[in-house]
Image 1 (cartoon, rainbow, N blue to C red):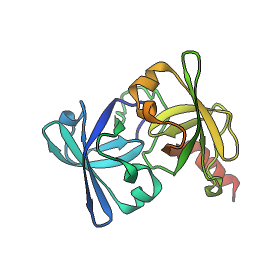
Image 2: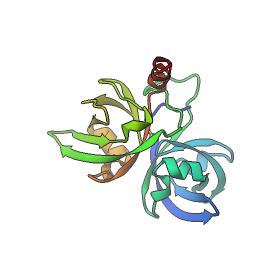
Image 3: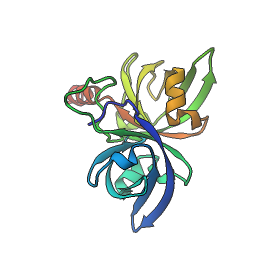
Image 4: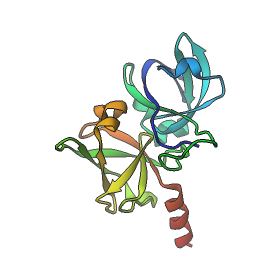
Length: 194
């Protein structure tokens, strides 16, 4: 379980396809602190560390993950948002993020405002996922607050710190991002649908 508060950015240094899997090697300031079998969020996707070498760590994404996230579209040199799992004795600064991406979205609009940024994302509403005004959403693993909630889109306002310390700095119109909808909202929607 994660909080959606990104610890650092990592840079993809190596990609290797193996049958339906993708092995991803990332260099980051966290890599030397990780251990084999540890869960780490990469752009909001919970992946297990399978190797550690010289300030890098390697994780494996299976076909299910590649189909539901933007992980399969990574290239060498891309930045990924990294977060280690939360500690039970720490504050929950973001919101409850499981690291289980529900679907992807497309950046439909990006506006630089006076000292902040606004992103609008569009997604396929047919999967039953919903946002609510001032509710929580995880975009590439970042815990954000929804504004302008609609049936198949929403916007988020980004402060300078978040922009500078996450890979939102690389997200432009047409970029694909990972979405994890609020777990409490998903349970409520499921119960209401019965």
